[in-house]
Amino acid sequence: MKNLALYLCLLCVISACSTPESTNAQSADTTVDMTVEEYEPTSTLVVPENFVTRAKFPFVDVHSHWFRAPTMRAGAIDTLISEMDGMNMAVIVNLSGGNGDNLKGAISNMESKYPNRIVTFANVDFDSVGAEGWTEKAVAQLRADVAAGARGLKVYKNLGMDVTDVDGIRVSVDDPRLDPIWALAGELGIPVLIHSADPANFWQPMDKFNEKWLELKLNPNRLRVEGVDAPFDTIMNEHYSMIGKHPETTFISAHLSWLGNDLGKLGSLLDKYPNMYSEVGAVIYEIGRQPKMALEFFTKYKDRILFGKDTYRVSEFDTYFRVFETADEYFPYYRKYHAQWRMYGADLPDDILKAVYYENALRIIPGLDASLFIN
Image (cartoon, rainbow, N blue to C red; front, side, top):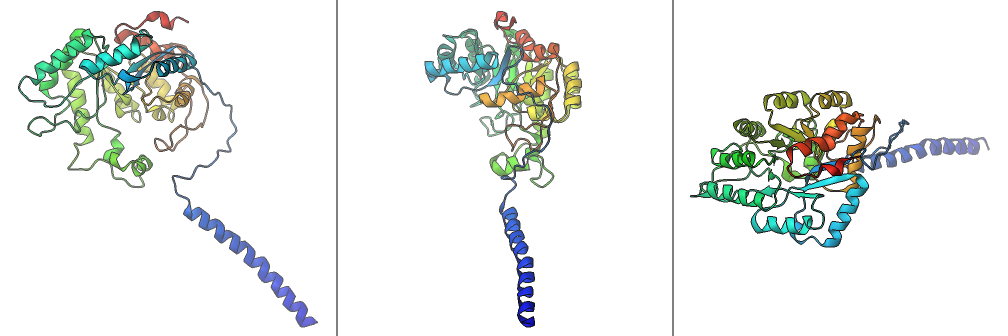
């Protein structure tokens, strides 16, 4: 009986020791199998939350794209206006107007029913730069596009990155063959919203130190290759050179000029180039991680920054409003691969909100209806 009791006791000990080990092993396996893309911890922080689905003041979205504008159905346009009303968006700027007949079609289709709510910018066709008469044709086309109703000019990032001339040589952003285009924009009184390069992280090693590692892993085509792609600094220096060469033309350097992570440098460039503005499209995550610095920056440069969103998704505008209008702490950004960190509200005062939301746009985009912004 003593031996049986001892045997049973040993079984109990073995069972007690082995069960947790098996459970822990299974738990460890689950952790190993989970990828960083899947890791989404739930915050346990309890702080006041102020969800903002409607902007405090009417605003202009200066950075949007509607690639099918010429064929967009009337019902879809009605839905767009209804969504804008819900967010308190007074005006949306379609930067993808194209030129020539495409531009006319976009303006006719999108602006005919809502002429004060939708604004269209033209685009330059950079094919065959350097061909005989190319510059003169591009200038004439822009003049015709503005006469047809374009209120500004949008330049895509392909200039400086992918555009080559008729000899196969990369066309720099400040190429002198393009100077007459920028000069004409100044003469006609229209702004040039220009996107040059991409976040500097795309040119950096894709390693554990790169803040954009997850974005590059999910979108490997965004990684820039040394010796193949023009360097980031080269492109952006050309960008500022172009702005400096044309002081009579208003330029909107898109996406906070990719300097949302260095507002001090962005401020120095705004000081250097009085004709340069910027906008916050797709980079609110930079503002949301430095609320004190952001408040200081916006206080000093409130007359030089515009509201922009880039990708049009109604659910994502909330984050912009919340960063600008509240003092909330540690709330999520809407797209994890853009930013793994949480947001904090800058709690901008009303005078700054009005400047960013609509006053600056009223000043530099011709033909906006000021009555839309009367509260």
